[in-house]
Figure 1 (cartoon, rainbow, N blue to C red):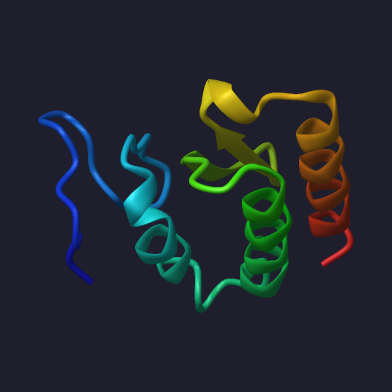
Figure 2: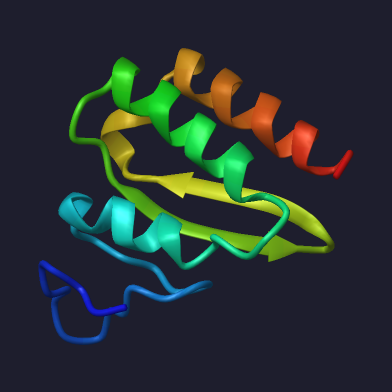
Length: 94
């Protein structure tokens, strides 16, 4: 899959890489479509998008066998953190 909106030099829209363009959120999530976490990631994205339209997924990765979902600074509120924590915990059950 190619990026619709290019990332700045040094960035890649691929699993495990940090990305900076919120317009690439959907393409970034699609990279996970064959992963057991995919449906969970889509639900998390939908909740965060409703909370903060246009937010940026900075990175999604597996770390120590668990899901890590990182966003830009504009969405790091207590409510957003609670949403992310809930989905990271749910991922541990899959």
